Amino acid sequence: MASSSGPSPILLDWITDVTGAPVESARRLAAGGRRHGFLVALVTADDPASLYLAVEPDDETSGDRASGLRLEADVFRRLAVDGVPVPTVVAVHPTVDAMLMHVVPGDAAYSRLGEDDQERVAIDFMRCLAAAHAVDPRLDPIDGLDPGGTPRDHLLAFLDRWEKAYRDGAHGPEPVVEHGLCWLRTHVPDTDRPLAFVQGDTGPGNFMADGGRVTAIVDWELAHLGDPLEDIGWLSMRCAQEPFPDFPARLAEYAAASATELDLAAIRYYRVLAEWTVALIGHLKSRRGLGDAERGNAFIYEQLHRRLMVEAMIEADGSRPTDVTPLEPADTERTWMYDMALDQLRESVLPALDDGLPVRRTKGVARTVRLLREVDRAGRQAEARERMVLSDALGEECPDLDAARRALAEGIRASTVGPATARHYAWTRVSLDNQLHGPAMGRLRDRHLPPLATEGDAT
Image 1 (cartoon, rainbow, N blue to C red):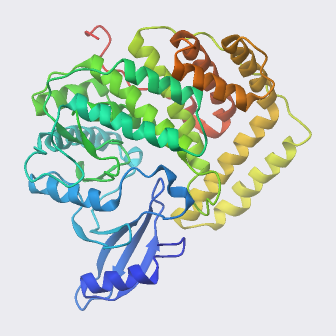
Image 2 (image 1 turned 60 degrees about the vertical axis):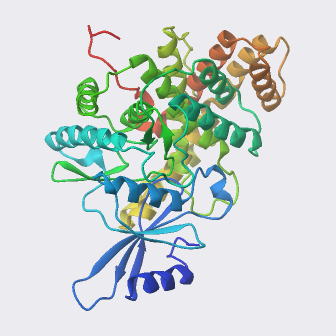
């Protein structure tokens, strides 16, 4: 219950009730993803007090929801007992999916840190992550996180939950996602590592840093129990967006801090799992009733992680991708219109904005326009290439592209389409899409997962 302008009156009254102070202001922040975040200033007799309010939307954009804020608050409270740096929870609303926290000092924009601070913060984060994984989930267990079973049991339950969301989703089967799910089901690792709290989506952008150290690990909406090395897979995913310096050295520091031997084969599996989960979340998102939901920038990251998912499977299997011939974009009679819109956004709109959220949304719109421009210039070529691969896989002509995609997904699920054919399609599809998305992706167009070992080390 929030809007782009501020929290609902119900939430404002609740904040006053739980803090004993009236709300002076509540400013929407440019938080990433689906959630709404507000910096709340209270009217107090002493120094001004600031809190952070997180709210889950209850509209059509929440179709990819993994868990509520109450579970996340319970995780924060449990980890804090063992000294893990997490936000301090003030209260959770009894009926609205909203959580009030103390403001954490620092900045979540890791890439804006200086080079020395980036290394110091990365080193400190590995220590903090090891500390989070050392917390025993069997002590004071959290409702909704059953500490029984092995990491393998919890991994299979994780896959079951997300597969159900996929099967029940509004957009039907999708061959790249289907191929990823089949791969994950047939390559489940076994481990005797102890069960741990897994953040999911951990790494740069989801922790606060100040003075060369981590002040809090934030955003535990995907929290669950499992193999601690799963979080290294998630960390790899986020480090493709905002790279840690010397990733193999960071892994060695984590291994030392956690007294855990690195299982690189398991980490390669969990890289696929992380990328698949992000790709599936993108597939599940609503395509209507979006309001001010973050979509323009999300298109770019969803494409990045679909490609990285396929790259991660190729790496884990030790195979080599086939070459995909570059598209040859050509201007159309509409190209000047896209250029005009981009010029106006850049020259007239962005300079007039000074608030983080409108700036972020405007950049997202600009990325959407760039993507549409490339689809107009080369989209038919990409569709023709994809149809050829689909026709070869299905053994028939494919005039209806959407129907052919569904048929291929169903064939992958039924094992009538083999893994090599599914992989060839997936790599071709994400490679073509990467070319269409490229001008909007900027540096992300050529980002890859970080290496797990330095050259010459055992892999």
